[in-house]
Image (cartoon, rainbow, N blue to C red; front, side, top):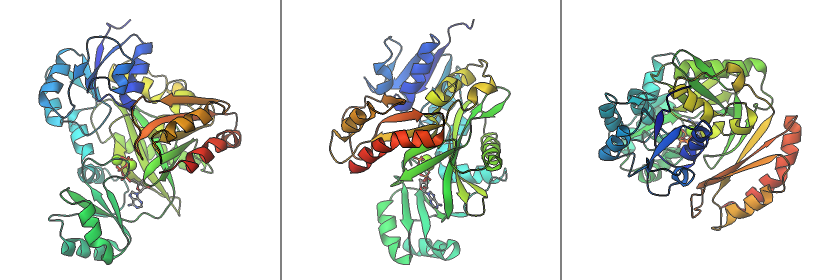
Length: 383
Ligand code: ATP
Ligand code: MG
Ligand code: MG
């Protein structure tokens, strides 16, 4: 048996909470760094948690003192703090990987060296309309203006349809470091969860993700109407992209499937990911189980990452009223085979991820039929 290692987690949101659920089942203590009573801390009663922020040097130092290995549920952390503590405690994945990945432009420049296909893009130096207009001439319209840093749920993206949109786009993303991306005319978005261990790079099956207003709405595992060849190709691309980074743990890889069936990387995340929540019910080892095992060098039988049953995950997102998500949850209670996960994040705001529901069934068609009434409820409650 292993020697009761203590895991430190930067961030106590829903991803941290689900990591704690996995750690708890192995009697592994997870010390969470975040504000008091954050979702992950609520399900973990011990005195090893740290109150503070994953963006503060002092808090990260304090967490490092009590842990054998440190990991993060979010990429927007102070990597200089991680660099400092890396001499005393293991940091997984590496602070170098997190630092490169947290800046989407640097991430892409890094991946380019490894031959990973992605949309053509240009960096902005001074965020002026003239500069962006020049880039627009090179990339064509529409193009996506993106914040290099602190981006999530599309908050950091602005679709620029023509030169006329440029002032509004720059106003929306002002004071942020920016780059622009050529529009990707995809027929579908795919994602793959990759698990990097001390000597292997493993992947879960390819899933289909559907975003609405740039926020992930549903995930279909396996991806619907996607050939086994594409499924395998997407997994291979995801593993290749993740292999470009140092360190162990789960990485979420988002991709575009283009009209000609070629694949392009959208972005990757150095952490457990929304597109992998279905693995809790859909596989023998969830992405959270695998992450904990990977960072602690515990065995991960590759077979445990295979799909057990077709699964559909639906995010429960804050809607038009503060209790929209509760109404959606109430509806989910009557859906057969539905596993409900609420994150206990307190007050709902429009667009805030409050929970998710996963339905599994013998066939994808059956799962689609079972979850449809819940999708209808969620659609009615949209903000
Ligand atoms: P996340 O919450 O996944 O971290 P994010 O804020 O980092 O999101 P992206 O993943 O870059 O943003 O983009 C969000 C969504 O916007 C994508 O899933 C896709 O639907 C759309 N999108 C992004 N880039 C492009 C592009 N170049 N062309 C067309 N659509 C795009
Ligand atoms: Mg992102
Ligand atoms: Mg994304």
